[in-house]
Length: 604
Image (cartoon, rainbow, N blue to C red; front, top):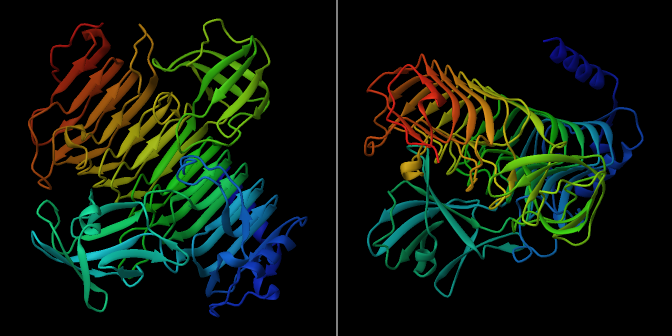
């Protein structure tokens, strides 16, 4: 409590003694629909060198166009490959570079962006606060149309007014301000149920289309396999993540408060190698009353290689083509042993590369990739990018003899403490929260409502996405998990702990110390929790009840454990039916439970 009171007083003091700069003094004019980009950037530049600055936006609408925007060059984690977006050049609405002690006060304004732009970039900056504003796009990158009539041979649909289209040679083309959708990805949204399903644009692309009324189109073709209901909304975007909603890089002490992200291109708010991020009352959701159903083309908030404290409080997530929250590091693969203390490392995933994953002084973990076994640690003496895909790192001391080509390095220094409280996760086709960090994690008093896949997923891999690393202290308590996992088939656990190790080392466990207590699970099916290769799982005093949201599948175990130890199950209330536990590669001493479990299989 004392810590948060001090932080509050610092924030109040910062605003009381800050020098106020009004953006209208530099030519920005609210509600003029004129391009405010250059004027706002001049106001931002005027803040450099000042002790404390309050950048004030009188309430209104401010428009930002790419024509006069600063062009940047950033490699952003989990965004795009060389084939998808070869030259990483991005236009930015608000460019905050090498700034300190700046507050952007929106006073309830809405910032409207045009074309493809990153809304803001915070780079090499410290003590930055953005508050009391909303972000939208004149033409969001997501196109939406509500289905009206569906037969085996035709579909009629009403296109949302924000989704501009043209009919060319009998085919529908989605376009925006200086862009066109080329690589279509479609998701079906059922607003009446708050559910999202994977769909397909190909059948529409092959069909003939005519406009039969304002914003109403009719497609004629083979729709015999197209699954949808009248009233569903088909949402379509380009699958390539050439832009992100906002980008924060190598910065410290960033606060977002009372911020609405109504729409974002590509990946959402991305924080890369940032320290201390505090988001309070931030919403990634369509503007109320807009009739839109999607806010982000991919993740809502993405944290890659961050450290310090990440706090998400009173945040809301609704309308995403991917995960609302993803927290992880990046494994780099050892491609060459150059000398006893020098390694050549390689970025492996096609969408993540080109940034300095290590800097001098960082502590690293040496990892056997297939087993995800950490077998030693070292400290970086020097590090440099030698190509977009490769780094050359020198360690302060020779690395262990067991290190070999194909192993991986994880940056231990850049791993955050995470606290997620009082948030609501819904309207996503995939997971609610992905989290892999070795430091303390608290997920408390949140609601996960009908997430398409697992509400919470804890992975760690060095052979696929290369998202690191192990968890060592996770508490998940006092949350509600309501009817999650309907897109996951038989893998529809509300919580899944799933390190991607395909080799097992005796008595070695990837994750440890995960407490799941005092939660309510309202599931339409049997599965609740699945865990793999974890030492110390506590599933205590949870309430599990059934709903009739969807038909349940074949009876299965509610709790599934594979190669775990130190498992404790007690005090849980299964309201509607008898509980069951399934074990694999475990013995009886690995688990203590006050309910019966199936006969465990012998350890390998």
